[in-house]
Image (tube, rainbow, N blue to C red):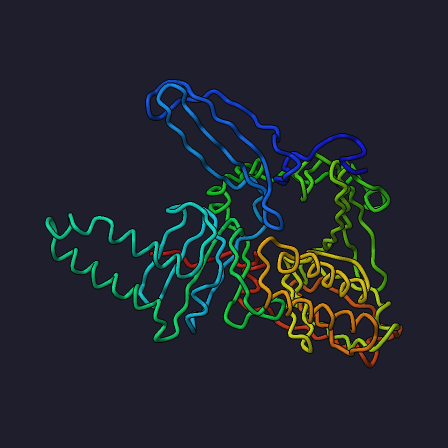
Length: 439
């Protein structure tokens, strides 16, 4: 059911020319300039293909003071993110950066760090971050030269080092770490893999959750034992459970259906499906129902035709997907967990690229749009059986699966390799109980 059918509008709505007077919420609030009461107007909207935001506008009729503010109103990601960006040329200075309030920026080359929550979230570039740092250091230099000349001289020397970074006379790295997971760095080679950027997701600690205002219910109390007699395994597997949630597209209240089922020759999984009656958005997600395996798994399938397209496929929420022939790499957060077929997962990648801002945005880069269209054409050739490729699922949690065409083991086009996880992979899965603290 769409919002045109039932007359209900989403909570977060896109700004459109045919909607000149969207609903706003007016709240009487204190003016910080004259201490009298003014009016704050709040509007919930969304940046297409990015996130939900809250626009707030304050105006005081007594003194004329005005103030505007934008805040992120979208969800906090399930994991934090650490992005290590290598700056090898001046072109890298133009990369767009989306960073939240909780993003720390570190340049190890200069032992320089911008702490988390010291700056507001923004959309900027690498050069913009350096320029803003320079401007902040130069702000009180005139006063320092009078009151503390030696300190001012040291700061001048450091400012010169920051300015030298823009010349890129040598390669250096910038590290972005965001516990909210809402930081991203532009990939100029999209949709191909970004060789100059390394992205690592990590599970937040309890302290980091508290920084974001996330508290688990009864986290400070002893865990209560599960009453195994209350629900049997057969009852859980046979029942479709429903619980309230918010639509990931428009954030309106809706229902999610959840059911546990077993994939033949593999394991139990939890399938969740959400349909929003307001905007019509549909989503399906699959999560493992049996925890993390002792080893990671890497599955490679050579896709040669219709027989391989029909293989069942489970990509878990921790699985990386690659197609080496196309230089394609899809992270675990991009498609989430899915139970589909080989053809279905390739089609999902193709559809997501076709609907990306590189082709549909207001300010489309012609070069990137051309590369994207050529890449989509290659995926179409794969789906038509005209191009042979290798599909790789690399899952540190060991919860991904591709169907074999034989009853005993793997067939000649399917290869399964189990491996020991690295420290970083264990960290991503939240398995590193002991962490090195600063001292």
